[in-house]
Amino acid sequence: MKTNKPVCVTGASGFIAAHITRELLERGYSVRGTVRKSPESYPFLLALPGAKERLELVKADLLTAGAYDLAVEGCDFVMHTASPYKINVKNPQADLVDPAVIGTTTILESCMKSKSVKRVIFTSSIAAITDEPENAKVFTEKDWNTMSSLDRQPYQYSKTLAELEAWDFIMRKRPKFDLVVINPVMVIGPSLSPSLNTTNQIIRDIMSGVYPGIMDLNWSFVDVRDVAKAHILAMENDSASGRYLCSAEEMHMRDLLALLKSSGFNRYSLPKIDLSGAAGSLLMKALSFTQPRDTGMYIRINVGRTMRCNNSKIKRELGLSFMPVKESIIETVKDMVKWGHLPQPSRIG
View 1 (cartoon, rainbow, N blue to C red):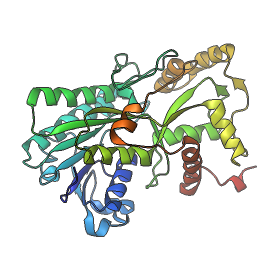
View 2: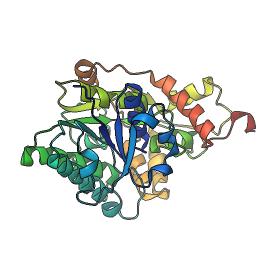
View 3: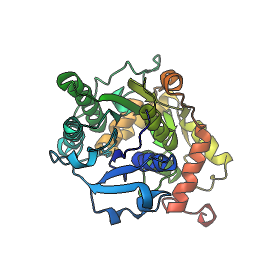
View 4: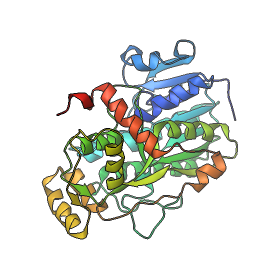
């Protein structure tokens, strides 16, 4: 399904949403993006090619009932990306769960009032599929995170509750629109704004001496531009349905470091001590208790386990092909240097 009406993108200034907005404009669509501040606060969005003619920014608050009524009216498609992504928050209920869940209800209620909305594409996360790797398991769209709570990885908990609320809303209210969900893994890639994406920050921390050694960690990565394309393919494909696990490939920390070294970034403070063995993992778990609560918990849950994801559904049904993760990582690092999140390599040492 294509449309000549505006496509509503909630939280348009976010890392993923900004790329969705750019991709939609490049494909000739008009975009109505919701933002938290006045439009002039987002010059990077207003400067996108096609923005002057086909981008409208409107203020809307996740926690205010009816806030999205005007934003979605007249739109065939709504892409709901707005949701806080923070770790080590003081109040997980107020800072993470309430905005994610109430925001989901708010946008879906507005879509239900609308006479035009045909489909909502919902940005969920691997966090709603699992909050911990399992060495013998390959995760698919059929899996659900049943482990997280306010006390255990509350960000993952918020994403799980938000997606559950979306599907429950569809079952209870039986709206005229349908719901398609994209579940990205660790999203990396160049940023359209000066802010630093949380996943990119992990790579920055690895390059900045934050990690004491090479840990037995691996991540499932996907480029933000592929995530944006996934949302648009889910909009344009009439038969798209259910959840789509959006993952390019996995990479271990030692392979990530080898890539950075071979790509000319060896002057940064990359971890050198190999702590990826059994004894090293025990040490890392012990040291994790010296870290902020959620960071330490993440280390204890993930060290020594292998994450694996099956991306066959999104490739088969949406026709999405992924860019190589190695290319994406190198672009990510160069982009962080450009924005000043990492120093220029020539100025190190």
